[in-house]
Every structure is written in structure tokens, then in C-alpha cells.
Length: 458
Image (tube, rainbow, N blue to C red):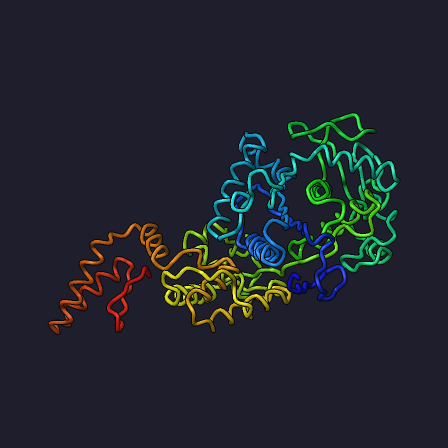
């Protein structure tokens, strides 16, 4: 029997025992990036959090029994505008941006399709792109129009929000209150200010596709319909978990629910909805106007991806996180202690129950990390850290990779350490200090212990 997993469900507002629709095939969907520009540090949080959930589900239900779809939005207004600025196609723009994003994810230790998919077997991880699923979107839109939940107006197709009486259940926003409080300027072709676009006409020069029936001119999809179409295509009309950032609850996830339920006639789109909290930078909301907008690549140029991952997971995923230099420094010290403790030990076959149990309680990473600290057996410590995506290397492998990345001359370092040891033996403290200072200038710290002198990259 699988261990009991409990998750906080945004839909019900409570922590619940997770019960998959089919324990032999657990299905999870997460909203991924819009690939028009370099990812910022806030984009990394949901990716890391739900990568951990994917790892946990694989541990609980078996790697062959979990499917994870993380979408890519590769057509929208920002993408169209950026591609036009550069004079390239949206595919050229998004291919390049996505490749850079993938490089960031690999540095963060995030599982990728090539890491988990087995040739000849059902894919365990899928990264669907919106532009590859236009046909599925059109079919859904036509079904919504046919059922009376959407209408055609001025070259648009719009979802008729008042036609769904329980719209707002996910975000806990009653329909009548939203209607009464609507302050947006209503487009002349909208029946209600709450109605949202499923399909829109393309402007001259913009990418376009054959429109749903009832619209003569080519056009392109709205934002929300893409996730409904991709999740249904790869996970089914109803699936187990839908995840994303808290900022997506309304309107994006609320509109996904409306489209999917009304199209397929299902009571829910996903049984469990998970949302991670906001990220601030040094106590302030991140924004370009505030001058604290930080790209993920800029952080990874200064800090190892494992450090960034740990800094993210020290806080509970549902709580706000304050991204600080101090937090990164603490994470680096924590990892240094772990690598020092495990050395070159191979991980145990299974993560200790003491580490697994807090993760089963709505991904309580703080408690899981505390349990890892308490482990004194190198093999068990490494297995526990592996479950959270850490200590994928031995200490020797990590040191070698760090040295290579820093471009250091190992022979020169070892020679200076030998010179320092000889000076210390001769009580020539001035010479010892000069060797130490030379090492520090190279970015190397030395530590003397009962087993001799060790060194590490600062």
C-alpha cells in the first residue's frame, strides 16, 4: 500500500488525503513558462516545487505510474511583439528562449523528459507546446459554441461566463459579486465584462491558423484555452493534480476550469489544485521599475544551481519567500556540510522514512531538511537528500566540477598547499601566510584538520 500523501487543495481550501483517480496512473499538470524572454527568479519557484512533487509521486506510486505534463506557452501578444521587433518567426524566438530555459532547469537539477522517459513506454514527462495543439483548441472552442457556453462576435469567440452559474468556485469569487464589481471597460462585442476570449483575429503580420467554424478569417487562440486543450490531450478530461503559481488562480485557472468542465460535461477539471506562494527580492516585490528584477541566468552565473534550489525549498511552498543574499549563503553552507559528511559514499537504496514523512505532509520541506541534518550515516544522508534533488554527485565529483567551472590550476593549488605545509612545519609563519594569501587570491580556502589540509573553492 502506498504511503498516505496529504496536499492542500485550493479548490476545497483544506489539506486532504490525496487519492488518485487511478493509482496505476497518477496524472499531474503544471503551467509552465511563456517563452518570450529570459526567465526571472520567480519563474524558478513553481518549477522547483512541482519537480519535487513529481519526484515524491514517483517515490510513492512508482516511476512508471506517474505522468507529468508541464506546458510551454509559445504564442501570445508578448511573443508576437518580440518576434516582430527582431524580424524573426515566433518559432525561432521561442525555440531559442526555450533552449536557454532548459539550460537553466538542468542547472537547477529539475527532471527533464530525457531523464525519465523510457523508449517504448508511455511518456512519464511531457512538455507540450501551445502551437502544437491548435487543432485540439479549435475542437474545444467549437464544442463550447455548440453547447451555448461560448459565442461568436466581431471575429472573436468568447466564453459566456454567466452561462456557468458556479463560475468562481476555485478562486472563491461568487459570480454575482464579480458582475456587480466589474469595472473594466467592456469591449462592444462582449455580452458581459466577465466574458473572456477563446479565439481572436490575428493582426496583419501576426501568426494565424484556420479559425473555428463560424469565423471566416484566420486567427489565433486566447491564453486560457491552451492549457485546457493540452491537459485534456495528454492527461484526460479529468485528472489528479493541477499546479501553478498563486497568481494564476484567477483568472487563468478559473477560466481553465470553466472551459474544460463546460466542454466535457465533467464536475471538475482536476481533483487537486496546488499553488505556490509569491517571491519577493530582499523584502520587496520584484519589478523592473524597482530595479530589483533578477533573471534566473544571472543568479546561476553567480551561484551553483544546487544552492539556488535549496534556497527555494527551505521555505514551505505555499508561503511567500523572500529571496536574499543571506538565504543563498546559508544554503551554500548547508550543502557544504552535507557534501563534507557524505564524502564519496553511495546513497542507500531508499530515502529514510524520517525524511519522507514530512514531505508526505503537504511537502513540508523545512521539516524534511531538518531530518536530513540529523542523519549521521553518509549513505542514508545522501539518499534523503537525493529525494529532494540534492547530492547527485559525490564530494570528489562536485569538487572536480567546481574546479573545472572556476578554471583553476589544480597543480598550482596543490603546490601552494605543500609550500604552506612545509612552512608551517618549519614554523615560518610569514611564508605560511603568503601561501594562504596566494590561495585566497585564486579563490581557494584551506582548512586544517586531524586528517590533513583540505581545500575548497570560495
